[in-house]
Length: 160
Image (cartoon, rainbow, N blue to C red; front, side, top):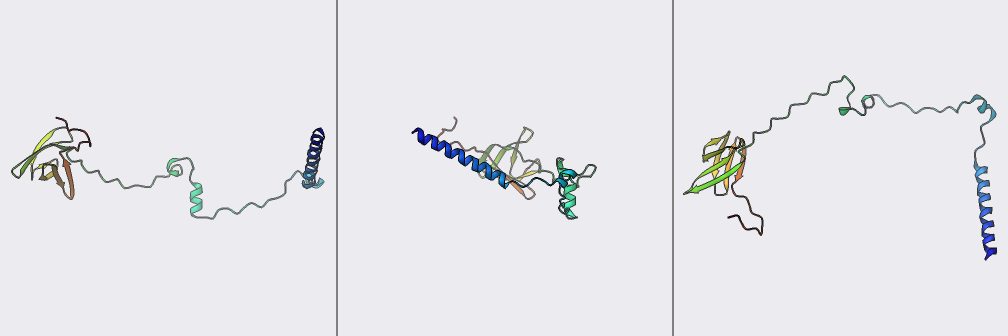
């Protein structure tokens, strides 16, 4: 057993020696005395510069500035976003339908309640139709349906 261990150690030492010897043999020779005296590195040709045009514009922009515009340059003018449409009344607070005609109680955006019938206007919206399920409002080409009934969750009994 000890003989095998000694042989294994000798084999490892021999391989390490050969490995070290090969590394020294493959190293490039040190610079000649002329290069060492001057202390200069060999000359390297720099790569060509970037092409002119759009590339120059990209390079001239600062990296860590919002919008990447050079200082003092005005940001491009943007068209003002269209004004958001005025919201319709928030919802139908109640609906009463009797004999083909109906009355709707509409909860307004300001918190008030308006009592309306078909054909009337409220906050610029015309009441087009009133059904047992809700009211339909129209302003220009925009149509909105306001539901009076809130669907109950499946399996839960409606409140009494």
